[in-house]
Length: 217
Ligand SMILES: [Zn+2]
Image: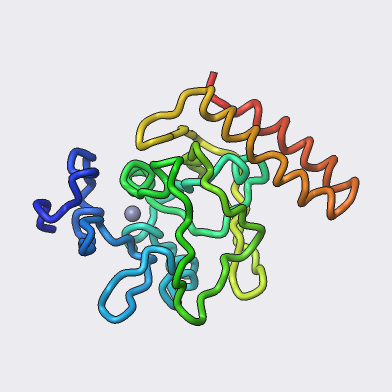
């Protein structure tokens, strides 16, 4: 990789060898392995054809495309930390840490998802996706997860974490930032559970209690 082509905003972020091997976009960002290329240009909002199947079948890192070890790192929003479900496969820990620091969406809480001009044939990720910027992001590391089919895609149900760290604006998040992110997201989760009925609401309360125990002091 020609590091002089990197965007200045991410110049100083330490880069693992695996990230170093990725191509750089015209805007100066390493292009994650999962990203779709359209007419020779990466579209960071779109998952490449067959990438999900390859990642699951061959146990490849979502960010760099190389084989994973026994520890899998999932960068997830706080709502996913509560219901332990996410629509994207795991990465190496060092790749996930790079992503939460360098990806404009994951590292900057004020960014909004850009859904203008989505290419034809684009499919929404499986599962219930909350389209808001999560504010704080958690890197959930686990040895265990289950893949479940969901329509045309898959959802990943995460096992107990072996470690977890919280991030915001490309640095470690404060407890106040994590709390704020959870409090502003909960009404969305609760509204979904209400549609499903009292059992879903009770389960949500159990999930929230379970998540509270894992938050930073
Ligand atoms: Zn990787």
